[in-house]
Length: 356
Ligand code: ZN
Ligand code: ZN
Image 1 (cartoon, rainbow, N blue to C red):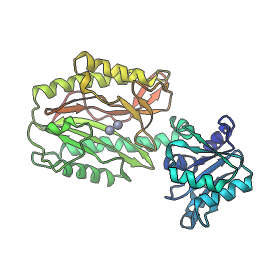
Image 2 (image 1 turned 120 degrees about the vertical axis):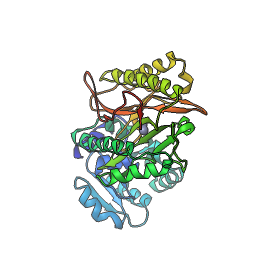
Image 3 (image 1 turned 90 degrees about the horizontal axis):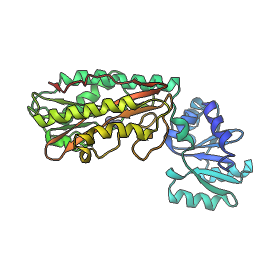
Image 4 (image 1 turned 135 degrees about the horizontal axis):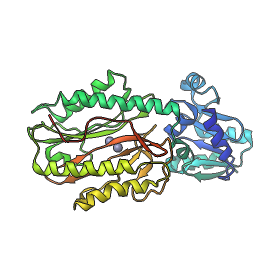
């Protein structure tokens, strides 16, 4: 973590700031290891600091031995004013995307002569490429999804509610080491599967319905994410048709992932397949996203994201087709970007629509 802090410290000059105030939780954790609910990280060209209140002092010392810990006596704004004064900082960078207007206003009052300068994406840029330790946690979190999927396929029966399925899936994976869910699970059956983000409801799953299961868990602070669409008994011809198309699109997307390729090219590879079958308008979201300390992070695999994929990025590939009133299909895997392709982190069966 010292290396990560050093990288930010070395980049301060380029951003024309003397220090960076990091408040965003994942960014703060990435650089500090500190998991407390309250506090800020201040990175300077020399020493860096965790500023937190008395509840978290011991925890911060344990989790962030590479940082100096400063206790807040009154407010965070006051503590920052003291520290910037003591260190003689003139320009303080802050994360423009994550600061409230009220905090900014108070801080500006307290800081006097210090200039506050918005900075974007400094820590997020570093987070794009996962190191070995991060990949270990991500692989663990992803492999629980494969175990969970196998288990839940044997659990789904006619009449069981979507929520019961979500709960069973969560319990199964948590008993095997998941700290928590990465997001509220999507269990969307029948016509509800036309909702790309149909959170599990009280609806009972019926015979002949397709079910979209989109789920993820957290292990050692890292997330996982996978989607499979299955059918309880024989599906309709329409669902079978769009399953084949979405699968083809997903395989095309996966085949496009490799270092050096722009993120938008992966989106195009998957989208072109769906468009060629006339379902382009029913695929209304981007093809994928990065996964790490957050379940949705950079890069976005969308037509608008020109980020060039690099080795060590972890991204999802998840095209879908959603037909209002009928249902939907999405297939999602997460992969690590490699020099000549990618490595699948989720490997549950998908090559034909599973009939439970
Ligand atoms: Zn997902
Ligand atoms: Zn996803």
